[in-house]
Length: 290
Image 1 (cartoon, rainbow, N blue to C red):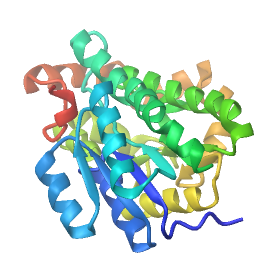
Image 2 (cartoon, rainbow, N blue to C red):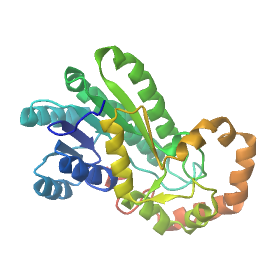
Image 3 (cartoon, helix red, strand yellow):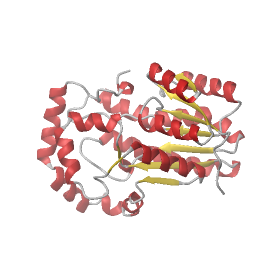
């Protein structure tokens, strides 16, 4: 049965930009009440004014702040029906040239931030017999040079959700993961603008791994996933085939294929570019600077 969003309360992290912001706009258009959680207070304030939404500025790695964000949402709306753990960042560069703090920060925001968000909101979602959506990625079942921490964190997110689903099923809570490919957001644009090596590799990857999806299409797919309380949401849908072929995607054959598209030359070029940039995150990635 369709899970009607009209009158429901959604708490969305990473809501200042990209997928989170578009998801909030579309949810309000469908009659939902929305709480916007994330960094960049001015952007959250403006979006909140546009949508008549609630907002709370906090870092998803700060449990006390997340608890306050959840409490303020419940005070405003009386409960939480859906939590969308969307906040995410991606460090630039390989393990060899990336500062270890940047690698760890990526895991902290993407994986630990999702765990903290869900844990803070879960009592209220359970009371509402609601839905949890955690944003994973195609990176959970594919590998690409320069994305070690990102891939690890998104694979961890998927397994966290898989276990959470089993733990909450008897209580009427449904749990889904979303697996987008490259979405046309500031995060992806930053990487594309910063790294010529990334642009070259992306252009050579086989379909559907080379697909760049408009953020509006992604948000619509996520909302349809919530409305149907789906276990998995793939953006685009063709990624379901990639996950089904995961043993092949992560095989020695795939290693050789990826090396052909972006082998040692690409890795060396990427490392040189990151050294020249002098930073470990994209220009708009405030989550990587705290």
